[in-house]
Length: 389
Ligand SMILES: Cc1cc2nc3c(=O)[nH]c(=O)nc-3n(C[C@H](O)[C@H](O)[C@H](O)COP(=O)(O)OP(=O)(O)OC[C@H]3O[C@@H](n4cnc5c(N)ncnc54)[C@H](O)[C@@H]3O)c2cc1C
Image (tube, rainbow, N blue to C red; front, top):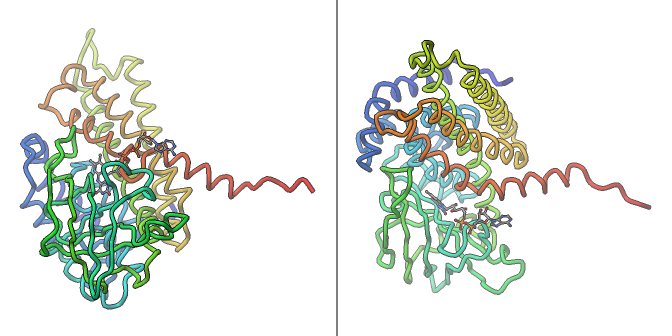
């Protein structure tokens, strides 16, 4: 890393770590097993200003660099990845409003989001379309001063508790290419026409809700069309997802580290055949591979964040970081479970939680198959074929 934290940034990271170790680590597994929403912890996150992490200072946020932003997601996920989910979609919405919102939209939404008073969700996926977002069917039709939204959204994290939503729609179903007919809105709950139809029961990522939402003539004021022009929603959302990839990559790094740290500690305590298991070469190979991949993930995550901090696009780097760090999280969680033996399978230790949380990261924020395609497309741009003329 070439990025050097200034004093204020060091203090922020140290404060977040202290909060996580003191307030979150002792209760994370218990709350997660009970699938209980961490209300008090969320209050603490509000006090720390975390909901304003990527909101400009002039709207009451912390305006952190992407590097510090990633460090916060890494630290949170080292303790409890689910908690990062409460912050993650909120930050994507904040990112999109900060970049593409009108001055009125920024003044109206960013200050209440920065305090965490109102939190955000992003409504992109639908029952039949996740990777292929241009195939969504939700429509927004303008009548007078309102757009009326109809359709169904699936997998919406924070869908029940969030009060402000980013909704990706089609304002023109027939335009080709399809993305040119897509528009994104900032919508507040409260009007009739929105039903949270169910909370999806999940393998992990517990304690925070992931929902199906049904929109039936749900009214959104025309002034809430992001950027004020129809047909630009796909671009807004894709840009927001670039920063989401960095946060998801950092979450992978956090889980991988947690799994490794538990495993190396346990391997020195557990004895078989008269010696600690860390003295068996088979275990040493695992520890070496885990630590090496974690270090490589760290370099990729922070290289992508630094590039974004320089104001450059980082699709290639963020894609590589997301791919590698989340696959590493998955591998490290499984390797930690092997090192723990039977104990890895028991709810008495946190390793089973890492093992259940890690797979979301290879799916969410754009599946890792999609990341490979993004990486390859960017590589082909970077290395264009020489003309045969
Ligand atoms: C716990 C959880 C929380 C989520 N939270 C949110 C949220 O808050 N908001 C939101 O909008 N969405 C959310 N999602 C949805 C998530 O973004 C999608 O699940 C993801 O994008 C994949 O879409 P899909 O499930 O429709 O899979 P599909 O798109 O149907 O993909 C199925 C498989 O096909 C592969 N595939 C698809 N197209 C290609 C291709 N061109 N080439 C190669 N392989 C391909 C995929 O990689 C995958 O392996 C969440 C999902 C989960 C599980």
